[in-house]
Length: 220
Image: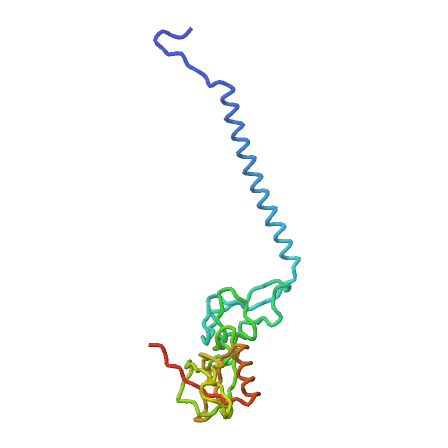
């Protein structure tokens, strides 16, 4: 009997309480399973890291442009697996600091001996367009001297044989870039060519053709 004027009190049903406890146990079990899995992964990864032989390598900490001096803050040495470290990789920051980049270097890229120059501007190979080779065209191969030109100018080369009609002259190479300035008037000229262009020039020379260089106007 409840006292008069008081509302009867209700108790939580035992099944509702059991369900709530069950969900709590499941959530705790899942959390413990995830934690155990993470700890196991870290443990096994640590074992694997220790089992792989490693060595030091110099790595760029940021992107470095061609010809840019390499400062101490630009590089650091890191341990890397010997199985993936290139044979020509730099192993000490002192091998890179104070030198200039011969090629564009990306952040986190391993530096190789060929990537850095001892001093001065980068070599000619770093200034060649992609897929091109440097070819020296001797001044003696040309039927007439070239007009005044500069680096980055472009030339067309015509070839013809003596005694033939002028209309039989043909364009053998088109728009090749000058990549090195001559030492003086009548000097050899260094061009950036692909293999097909190099073969065309050599074929004309070997077959006694006269070669004429034409300086292309620059785009305005």
